[in-house]
Length: 252
Image (cartoon, rainbow, N blue to C red; front, side, top):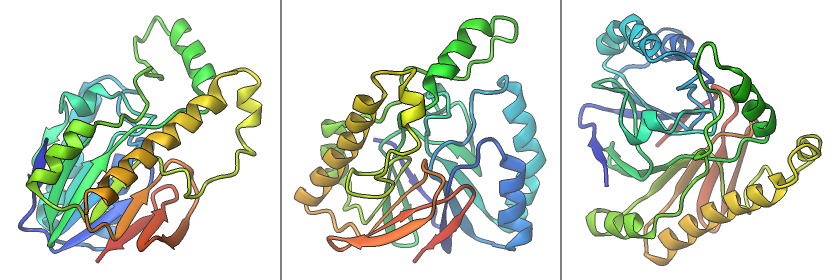
């Protein structure tokens, strides 16, 4: 279990997909909204892997001073538009800018937050096809291990350490929006297994939810991105929030 503590944080904000707009994210956090002492957590599709590794060091050098002066931190959860190695190998591990592994626990502002990444790319057929042809740049656009994983042993270990009150994932349980599959049929014509894999993805999130509830974790909030829509609803005492692209929502 990876655990990160932020005793200097006075606010927690969750953000939807950013798709590589790291500069814009730091500007929005520190300048546009003038937030300080804030832990910002991106709920997946950060954009790691679409550029060569040195690119992300350049990005951090550009935004590090701004983050430090405002006493802000940016943590990033794995999405399906992310190279998983950046997260599970902690390849981005700066003090104020970090890609965190699945099943990381964050402690800040009297909250214990569980973060689990991954989802199915509905556009995976075209991205796989692009990768097979993209031999010149050697920069990938699709990763087969993009799916979320149900890790019962890790959840049990989390339960020994703390009680989770907030969950941040990239996709969502099956009973949450987005439920309609209207926009998927076109992709499924080229990708016959797509519907079944998406069902398995959402079932994985159901298993995580059921485990946490059965184990007595006092969950009050669950945030996720992935669907590029905004929606909030309380279900079984948990406030579920789907975040649109670069949408900010404060955890209180």
